[in-house]
Amino acid sequence: MPEITLPEVELNIYGPKDPVEVPVVENYIITKESSPNFVRHITFDVSGTELEGKIKVGQSVGIFPPGKNERGRDYKLRLYSVSSPNGGEHGKPNLISTTVKRTIEELDNKLYIGVASNYLADLQPGDMVKISGPSGKRFLLPEKEKEFNYLFFATGTGIAPYRGMIMELFEKGDYQNECALIFGCPYRTDVLYSDYFEKMAQEHSNFHYLKSISRESRRKDGSKHYVQTKIKDEEELLLPILKKKNTLVYICGLKGMEAGIYKELLRLGLDEYLDIRKKLPDDLNDIPRNDIKKFMKPSARTFEEVY
Ligand code: A2P
Image 1 (cartoon, rainbow, N blue to C red):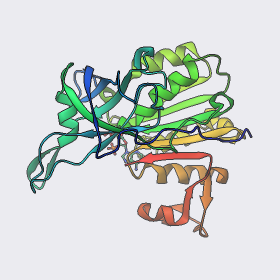
Image 2 (image 1 turned 90 degrees about the vertical axis):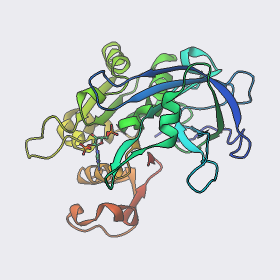
Image 3 (image 1 turned 45 degrees about the vertical axis):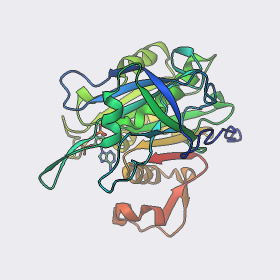
């Protein structure tokens, strides 16, 4: 097993009290036309700021929506994962991208429109945005990233960091190990960046692109297709990768998804991905989802960003 050393990263070059203003250079929709959801790919130009070339994929930036909340206070910053590679979007170190889903919900008979996501999604090229960061020092590719295999699990906009990570692995020199991306979303119209990932899967036999579409069909036992059910449904492909000594697991997206993945890893006896803290019940389903962290945490081989 090669040593898992995470790269040194810069943190809060611009702190939350000291954001910098940068222009938007592109903002385009990435959900399909017929989708009821709106996810956008947004790129900022950080030229002339200290952020240029300093943000690593897996890190986040803080965004400050303008205006005040109902208590008359400035809106707080919201963190968004960077989806461009270390060298920047379009190979330019001054361009960083993120992936934003408009939050539109009905709560208690009232429409709720997420402040930050809709502010970002409405932006036009040339508009200025206050950003801080970068933040995050754990959800990163290790140094010597090409020496590892990866299972990347994403739900929804949790795909963002993997876009840049896959660019790092496959577009810079020769990557010979195995990488599987397992992406979950409700409908086919919500699959994000699929043209890019399909192309990568066609061009690289060591890149495996699996989609779990949860609301269009059911598995044989009637359960939904979730990212964790792919571990069972694609066991022939995924188990040999998981059993290798130099494999890392990454989990990004909806809070709760990690519990399902942990249970599948344990079912297969792959305890090395977890740090077990308490005696497990015979039936893992007896552990309530919200209690899972009392029983186990990610080990050094598992990276997690859930929200
Ligand atoms: P569903 O909502 O059908 O239950 P998005 O962020 O685009 O809505 O996608 C999130 C995806 O993650 C959906 O397919 C959603 O399925 C699925 N999902 C919901 N809960 C879990 C969970 N606990 N584990 C894994 N996937 C989940």
